[in-house]
Each structure stands twice: as structure tokens, then as C-alpha cells.
Image 1 (cartoon, helix red, strand yellow):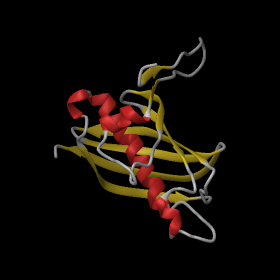
Image 2 (cartoon, one colour):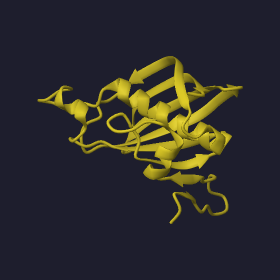
Image 3 (cartoon, one colour):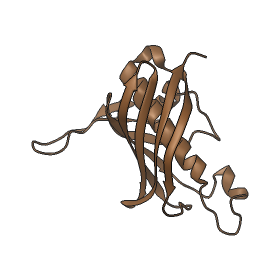
Amino acid sequence: MDAETRSESKAGEPKAGLTIDLQRIMQMIPHRYPFLMIDKVENVIAGESAVGIKNVTINEPFFQGHFPSEPVMPGVLIIEAMAQTSAVLVVHTLGKDFEGKLVYFMSVDSARFRKPVVPGDRLHIHVVKDRNRGMVWKFNAEAKVDGVLVAEATYAAMILDR
């Protein structure tokens, strides 16, 4: 199966997009372990939206110190997973010439953390493009575990050459 596959949709159902696997993500964005915060991106609709998937495991290096007796995924890393999902959407939208370019945060607004994310959770990061002007993109994102909202934010980013 290709690294990018189109999901099938039936008449009357919402439009489904591409699924992008981990190997393809690493071609698209420069992040690597231990800072690659997404495992897969589903329902990628160019210029519109995507859903990042993060399988949270106890093997994550940040759990050694946050917190050893009660491991909780840091909220800033959930925001980073949102940004990486958005970066994949931007690169997919703009094409191969933008693969491997850096995407920098410009602002993070209205970040809210509703419920802790712990080992064993599967984080679904829903990102929707609000707008873009040139290389500046603005997104709204929600992170969910088992359909329950755990975090949300609005943020802007800029894609640049290295």
C-alpha cells in the first residue's frame, strides 16, 4: 500500500482524504525522535483539514520526568503535535517543493487543556485551516481521546526555507 492512500467515501458521507504514514511524514517534515509527535495523519484534505494520530506510550522520554509517579503528556507537546499535523497539511497542500522546510510558530492563542493525556491514550488531533496569506497559515485545532476533547488551540505558523 502507498504511503499516501485515498480513503473511500460513500454518497452522502463527509468527504474523506488521504492517509499519510510515518515514513511519508518524515519525508514531509524535518522532525525526528524524540520530537516527532505524530505517528500518522488521516483524512488529509489539501488546503482544508487533517487528523493527526499520536499513540501515547509509557516509553516517551518526557514521562521520565513528567511525572514519574503519575505520567501526564505535557500540554505544550500536545500543542506541538497539533503544529506537526498542520505542517503535514501545509506541505501536502503546497507540494513536494516544500518537503523538509521548517514551519515556525508565530502565535498560539486560546489554548485550553481539558483533561490529562496519559500512556495508553490514542490522541486524535483535528486541525482545520482558518486562513492563509502567502507562507503564513492560521489553524484551529482540537485534540481528542476516545471522542472526548482534551485540548484545543488556535495558532499561526510560517513555512520557511532552511
